[in-house]
Image 1 (spheres, one colour):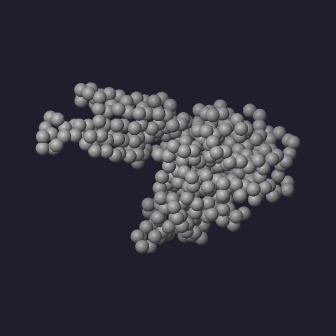
Image 2: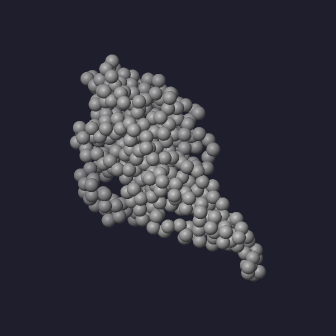
Length: 413
């Protein structure tokens, strides 16, 4: 199994599938379409799945492993996303480190780019294991091509097992999760599952059924530009107002100073000049009331500053992105209970904590498909220090197989 799993993963990460938030198309990039059609569909055909389809209206590849038993099994789905994050993703050159000894890993000797336990203490958890890293020039793409490789390898394993009874098992590989649009057009009714799992988590043991509530805010500052030599009492510098706005938000409620259930305001980007500046924020909180309060704080601050300026120079476009899937899953804990039992059966201690982010399951759960998130084995996602443990990936495959093995009777809520 290990050879096929690693070979699949290495093949997938070398195919560039970065999504593009500015693109109006679905999927947002043509590379995702090509990956779906030229890589994933042939893989699914090769392992003998049925009803393999690419849906051009939403960019999802779906397939079915038909039931082989008349016993009462639920219909279970496994989901992963094809796209990678907004970081250099072309010409990925994965490096394999066998029997990691807990030392510094020199990713790029020329630039002395080092993956070190001093900076990333969790590396010490992987002593003796095989790690796959980047060469320091790109991200790796374990988020979420590790999940894709694990799902396909697990289904191949299940199909080859002579004595493993199961119900219908469905898979879905989708686009644009990293830009928050992937699940928007997913055909939940057509997928037809009782519940599903995204294989999109981090280190070994993660089992997440709570996510952030999430919103995006675009803050536009309208200034007035005149010649600086005659600017007194006339110029309004939009850049300065942008700085003042951000400084007035709670400075300790940012990603770099928060953890666990603490929410935040995150300034993602700023651009502009004296005449006009724009800031892009994301707002996150697990608690719905605190989430709403954060949105109100941003809007109220703009109103206060406009009043002080005696004219409306600050405008905000705000929209919700997704909600805490725990609100849905707490009403139907079957998939969580089943995954927890499966992990324990294969010797994994489940780590059940709220995810400080979101997955496709955050949206799918509210669309009628309860979808908790399971570890895929990687760490340091979205950047050049990303890595994944081969042994963690193997364990993820084992968890998928064990979920199917233990799923009889979980179809009834």
